[in-house]
Length: 420
Image 1 (cartoon, rainbow, N blue to C red):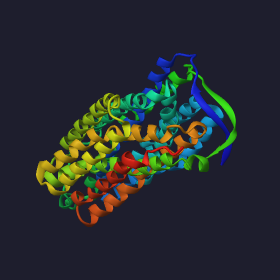
Image 2 (image 1 turned 90 degrees about the vertical axis):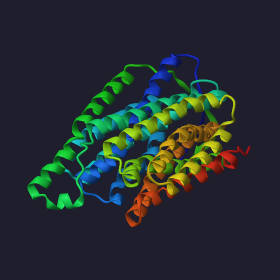
Image 3 (image 1 turned 180 degrees about the vertical axis):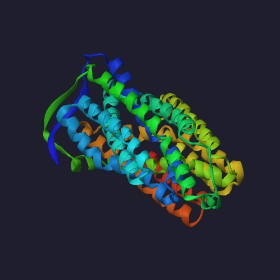
Image 4 (image 1 turned 90 degrees about the horizontal axis):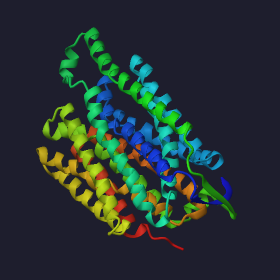
């Protein structure tokens, strides 16, 4: 898969501030829908009567879509431009959200997974376009700061989603296996159907909001990005040869796996270690992701004074210490340890991304696609975590994200270095 190489730079013409604001809104949209997944996991576990391993397929379907669609998204952008890639992504997002209605009506878990796969495919287009586009809307030396600022609104979506999902999706009605077994078939079916039906209205509203954003993009002219053809041929292979990029792909794979593991099983973890009810645990998760939001702004500020790679390493080590506490503490101390992790996670994705595409030049588009593909870690590690939980317990399963952060710390220490 090769193409004539292009060097990309933002042109001085066009409304750069408006473009930055519009693109930043996309960061909110994909964060919002992804952070409904920790709500959907325990909710569909009830509605569809799933094991922890089966419920982890929610994450797998989402992040597998990123792996499959990132390269097509990069090719669409290369041929038709960033704007068309964004519009295609928003369209897929709308279709997937609307598919939650028939999924809930039939209570077919595979249909829920299909809807999530389509939403995530749309988000893959959005992320493949938005992350590199933001880095081009200004001087290269401030690219990391700019991306961290946009990712701060990703943090806002992460914060809002658990509160709204907990309020409008989770019923708060929890039955023990013995109570479910004692129900008549009719009563059980009514209970499970009412649980499934609660997702319909929220996802219809989401579809309408995204449709409105799509219309706004259709009628707004974004600043052009110059493409200067050079003699060299760009390909996935040539992009991968940049050692700091290949290291970033590996680090991002493990980081996203860790992030998804930490949040997706938080409600289960809180109930297991402290017997916290699901609605209360969802609120705790929301406040934890408020820490994620605050961390994004703090991280954006700190990158002015601390080298991005050093900040990445420090935050990774902090996450490892907290998760070690989560594995050893009892009761609410364990929950508080996990609660603090998102604050330190917050700078990792944009920092790894910006370090990875640094000085790629002609290989920027394929480098961006590879980094978006790397979020497939979110498809793999939750399955492993769910398997450990089913075989042992959810607390022990938190060793998975702890080990993932070790790889991220390595990238901040040595893996980010650019080999000229």
